[in-house]
Amino acid sequence: MDISKEQVINALKFVHDPDLHKDVVSLGMIEDIEVDGNKVSFKLVLTTPACPMKDKMKNDCVKAIQGRVDPYAEVNVELTSRTTTRRGPDDTMLKGVKNIIAVVSGKGGVGKSTVAANLAISLSRLGAKVGLLDADIYGPSVPLMFDLVDAHPKAREEDGKTILEPIEKYGIKLLSIGFFVDPKKALVWRGPMASNYFTQMLTGGDWGELDYLVIDMPPGTGDIHLTLVQTVPVTGAAIVTTPQEVALADARKAYNMFTTDSIKVPVLGLVENMAWFTPAELPENKYYIFGKEGGKRFAEEIGVPLLGQIPLVQSICESGDSGNPSAMLDEGAVALAFRQLAESVAQQIAIRNANLDPTQVVEIKS
Image 1 (cartoon, rainbow, N blue to C red):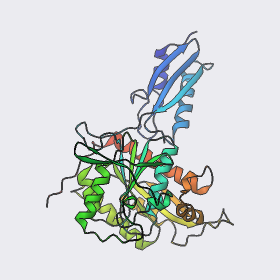
Image 2: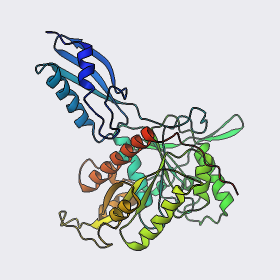
Image 3: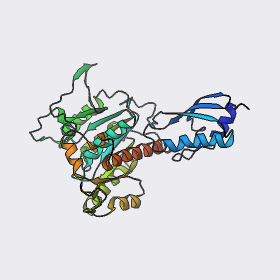
């Protein structure tokens, strides 16, 4: 007996997206159904190419058809993706960028820039179109971490505006104030000047079509943060901390800033960096030199997801200093940790886009 498209659709209504808690048919995730006898093929359109549940959802689709229609059905599921966005239709700033991720920390020294760089690379390696903006004005690290210390982006004039062309490396588009200043000299800038340079890179960059623009923010809660939320609609913030109490106290300030009534930027979750130390000669050992699971407990306290726990491994530092971030590795605990972080961030953005209103530029009244 031949299988009908209607039978396929009815069976797939029993397959649910585990994050969005709705069936894949009502979510519009099933396309191009073709049936020939007992052969069934269709596309499963995921909400992000970095979906951590894609294999489970694919298997659930096969089981649903074989269990509810024909146990001998030959089912071919083609996985594809269409990254979700909640950019409003009237948003004109960075119109081709679907999601803007602010990577923040309450204090310096917690590895925020390392996390931001490896997050961007991992998202790209999972199939997403990604940009990385180094907004850490006073301590830009992208040129060193990507071995681009002597690089200088091209610029062109367009309708009276200067347009910067991001440098592409490791599959992502990059801009950093470090590309435009002498790395040997300190930047002695007042807040307005720093904000102007940041705005030029953000809005004057030719970012094109991106699934995610990752922004490595300066530590603390200052002018650059306010300039960001007043300029573009931020999809969400990822807060980076280490496990010890002094870092968690400052992470709380970052959380309070983004969730205050005047800003209200969704917090995607918390990243616990330097969660434990693992020596190269003892890869199975964990030493909690900064305390154990402080970030995890804090995430539970404020009610946000723990996006990932990144170990303290010497190779992370070495790879960043040599211009080859750890996420470029194909295997190993560090590469796995950053890949899982990227999947968690993409997952939380999909959930955020499904459940919250479109992002808005913040209007802060003085």
